Structures are given as C-alpha cells and as structure tokens.
Length: 265
Image 1 (spheres, rainbow, N blue to C red):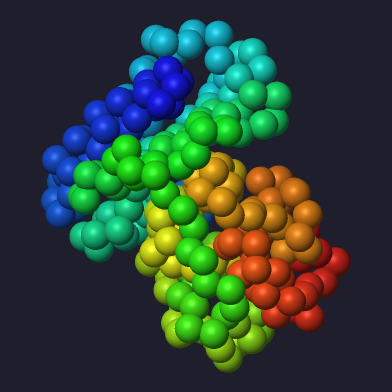
Image 2 (cartoon, helix red, strand yellow):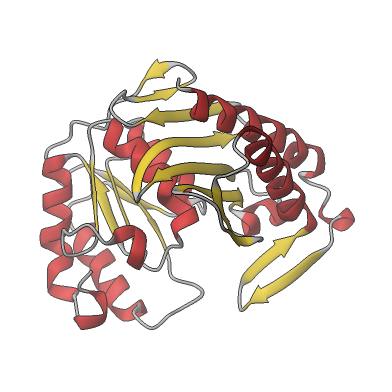
C-alpha cells in the first residue's frame, strides 16, 4: 500500500469509529434534507472533517472535493471524499454503508479506499498494483454471460428524468440474471464487484464521490468501468456500467436500446 493509500485507510478507519458510535442512535443525530430524498446528518459532517483534517495534515497543498464541504482548491492532486455513502441506510439502522476516499492526479485515479466499518472490511487499490480486501488480493468474477449473474444497481430517487429508461434496462437485464440487488451504497457495490461478490453493476446519475474509489478498485481487480455507451465519461456523467470484460459487454448490449441523447454517456 503506497503512502497516500495508507493515510486514506487510516482516516477512513478513524471516521468509521465515529460512524459506529452513533449507528442505531438516530434520535440523537441532527438530520436535514438537502433536497428531495437526500439527507445529511451531523455524523456525515463530522466524519468528513476527520478525513479532511487527516489529508490536510499529510498533504496541505492537495485539492479536496468532499460531498458536504464542496471543493477545496490546491494543486493537481485531488482527493474525492464521501464520508458516509449510504446515509439513508445509516439513518434507518440498515447495515449497509461505507466511507469512500479516492485520489486523482491530473484526472487519473491513483489511490482508492472503501471502508465498511460494520464488517471491518478495508478495500484498497493503488494504480498498477492491484486491489485488496484486508490485504488479500481481489479479482472480479469470471462469469462470462448474464445467465446466472448477480447484478448490482441503484434506483434513481433524486432525479427521475430517465427513470423509464432505467426500468427498461432493468427489465432487459433481468431476463437472464439470477438477481438484481440494490443495497444502497454505491461505493460498497463497486467494492463487492471488485471482490467477485456481484458480477456486474450499472447506475444512472451518481456523483463522483459515490464511485471514484470504487472505479479504481474494479479496474485494479481486472474489471472494466465505462459510461453507458462504453466510453470514458462515467465520472463526469455519473452514468456507469461495470463488470469483467465479457459481462460488461453483455450488459452494454442490453442497455443500448434504452439510450437517448441525454443518456448516451
């Protein structure tokens, strides 16, 4: 693990300790609605401050993009932080949430950490050096077709502009798949894909902090991550398809008929 990834992992573990302290005690947490069906709590903000302080202490010149604090300008290194991915789950006591931290250099993902504090599972990746779960090497599933596949997704709940196209995609993918799962933390979905626990993933309208770290995990575990048209604007558009090479192609083929100009990326 390189030094930047190591610092991100330590920050994620410290923030995870905070999340565990308040998990299941929602009555003691101040919560507000940022927009329809999108919540933030004082725990999100406290977790984010722990991570930001750790990054600023180690790398005071680096830029930071964090879900709650926004953009902190610095040099060509950019940290992308989600201090609590799965806030709605967390606030309901649903045990599926995570912390996601990624580092980009001039637009190229370099380091990734996704941490599940409930299971104490630390997913990490360094560009060119593979992806790991608690120091054990990860590989994406080797399943070659949708037949029997377990596919992860996230249902659009904030912006429902393309919800009909989304459910068309789901119906097409369901024909052969063994199941579709929507656990509620995209960062963990990508981590599970990298670990071979699910075979593919697609979603519309994600924010970069939801899946920047997860993208590198999947790529370093031997997978492919693209936008809905098979291009490379997924971090920009938030529309994403991922899996091993053959699974990715099979999913793109099923998704293609539902693309429109607004969803062609």
